[in-house]
Structures are given as C-alpha cells and as structure tokens.
Length: 248
Image (cartoon, rainbow, N blue to C red; front, side):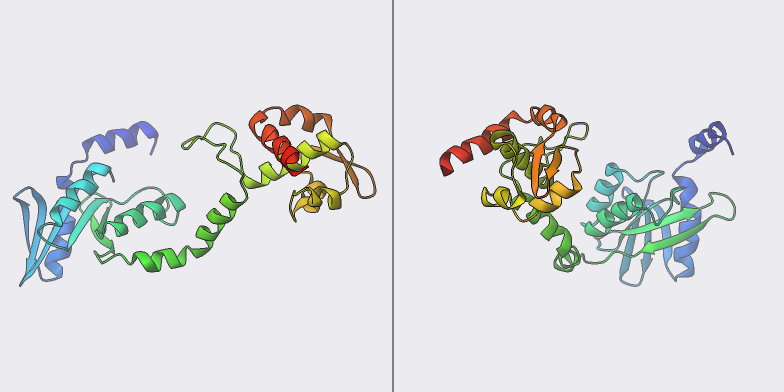
C-alpha cells in the first residue's frame, strides 16, 4: 500500500471503528458492555467490577488526560488505539508504554480495523511500583551522578539538541589541553599531579578529538587542532587557568 492510500485509509477511520472488537472482547470475558455513558467512550460491568475504556485513533496527551479523569470513578481504566505500525519492541514504543503504566492505565490495541478486527490487551491497569522501577534503573542513576561529579560547572543549556553538549569526558580533555597549552610538553604523571584525574593516560592515548600528540615516550603536546577548537570554550579555559593560579 503506498503512502497516499494509507493516508486515505487513516482519514476514514473513526473512533467508533474500535468499539465492536473491544465490545466483543469484554463480552467474551463475561461483561455487559455499553457505549457512550456519561462521557465515557465504553463502560463494561461485571458484578461490582466497573471498567472504562477511552478510545482514540492515536496515542496523545489528550487521551491520557481523558483516561486519568476516568480514574476518579474506577481504577480499571484502559486506553484503546489502533495497533501501531511501528515495531512494538522498539525503544520509542517501550517509553510510551512506560508512561501509560506510570499513570496506572491499561492498554488495548485493535488490530486490523475490518470485519476481522481483534482487540488485544497489552497490559491491564495496575499500581505502579516506583521504588521497584528506580531499583531497575540503578545503573542509569549512578551514570547520571558520575557524569555530574565529573563536571566543574553547568556549561549546557537544558533542552539543547543542536548544539555541542559538554560532557565530563570532554571537559577532562579541555582541562588536559589547557595545561598543555599553558605549560608546554608534559607527561601524564605531571598532568595527574596538576589534577587532571586518573583517566589522563587513557585520554591522551585514545586522543578522541585529535587534540594531543606524543612527541616522545611519556611526553605529550597539544596539536594545532586542539588549540583552535579549545578556543570555543573560553569559560572552561578561564576556569582551569584560574585554578592554576589559586593552586600556586
């Protein structure tokens, strides 16, 4: 199917197209199902159990807000959308599902909006265990703290995505380059004594930015490329030069 045909099909879809397969699913589970009840798209009842399903053709903030409002009347709230064409094992989809789980909502997808359409519950509403979630992300938390500890100050603008980002690694490279620029040829041992840290030798050997050159065994200088590119970070250069002054 080409792009134009897909757009035409998408325009023809309506939220009511999701209703029948979802109704069939809950009826098969023993529920009585009703459409459009007091602003709720679908309500399913079985004994004292009350389920609300909100329908949308796309996963949106409006849908999440709508579903969150329904949690005032029941903790069994689902959102339902057509099954996405993107891979359901992609990182982007996993992040969306994480948000839905955080809101303690369930998720239903409807495959093939046709006479053979089928509703599938990807997950049910359940309490979100924030402590467990943080425990599973312990390594990410440690990585964030390690990165912060490796920076001397905040040289980035939050939300930047088209500008050069200052990382702890790059800042360490600038510090080494600054000292080589100021003192001339130095050994890794001398640089470490000046405070460039335990990764100094590795940074010089890997030379990721092409800023350093070994002129003889155990002795490095800054390259012309390094001198030129480091001028883009005057704040950091001044910071490390001031540190030298205060240490002497």
